[in-house]
Image (cartoon, rainbow over all chains, first blue to last red; front, top):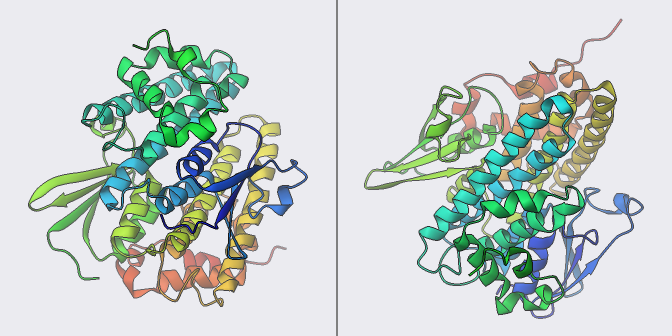
Length: 224
Length: 229
């Protein structure tokens, strides 16, 4: 661990799962001292370095260091706290999966906001991309000897990011599109469901996940 | 860095200045053997690992190919492998942050480009315009903090320099066919600090092979704007 024991973190975001769940899970798994701030919005917009959230504030030895951009924050925390492999190729494979997942957000918004003439095309594109991501999760898992993790046999950045991804698409995005879970859930294999539930049970994640609804109930119809 | 003769790279992308530009700059600066492939599209879509481009193939003379996708991921891998991202985790994050901020601005640019209704186009353009102003502000602030020497950090070509150059190249050169007035929108916003960074990057001997391909960004941003009558 490269962070001093007197280092404290503040994660600024909205009071939503949104784009910050990966950051929350990483800070939790790291056993870091951290709190969350929910700046009044848009009142506090101009006070952020890039007028956007999330923002990570790292305070140690009287110094304050600030970072923004959700995926940069995630990769930073993953590296500081040892959840990212030090091998460049192994790191690139985990980051690749995370970046692919991130590509789905614009596709989700495009199909949500599409005008009637474009709706069906945008829905197809969203489904194609989603299918590809789920397939990739399955492929990575099938090549790993442990079925409780995507890579190796310990909680990694990829595991955390996968859990946050499914939480976003099965739980969070329902506020935008109430049937999104009915679209996503049928695509999940029993292996992926087991992986999600295994990650959920990781002791390192308990301090955060104990405050959230378990995904077990929403996935239970297929779990074994 | 001495070229490793056992490694060769192939970068697959469209024949355009787009999200693979940072990777092209990095491959050139790394002084490695590399070629570009422009697969017929969409014919070759199913033959790519994820049906998308860019794709980077790292060929080893005595090992399996290493294949990765996602433009930012390819950039970060090359930048780390060839010493353009610092090993210090905080310094690395500050450089990656600049790339992600520029990507956000590019996404906003595309939103206004593809907007259907005039109302959406105006709203999206305002968002893009505002975000670009903010980006220029944070980039200029960083250049100033580094002494305004044509580099974002330190005194050598870095990942941050390359991705900053790449994003202005995509918008000002790459996108001009799709939105002719983009030069007149972006150019006036460029601060002297950014213009100096752009010219410094382009003049770097490490990028001689890249610059020789033409499409000089420095020429466009330093050309005096012709007076309007």
